[in-house]
Image (cartoon, rainbow, N blue to C red):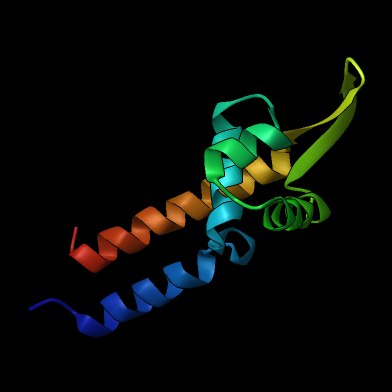
Length: 111
């Protein structure tokens, strides 16, 4: 019979390893997208994530304030464009968060 206390402790430990900032679906999606692309614009995020400008801007700002993403403001013609990149800190925190999620799922399914 499996050791339920050990499993519960393992699951509890994995939950503690989750990154609170990345628990929000939009912030997690932004970081995952940026882990696959060198940079993305605000308008591209809006199209991919189907978020309102206000919500998307707030979530991107939280990631920027935490140092997970960096921004560059440029102009394309006469139109302003904001580009976002995942920082090394953001990349490391995303990897740790995903590892913790995988371990949590594995513990929960007995795998």
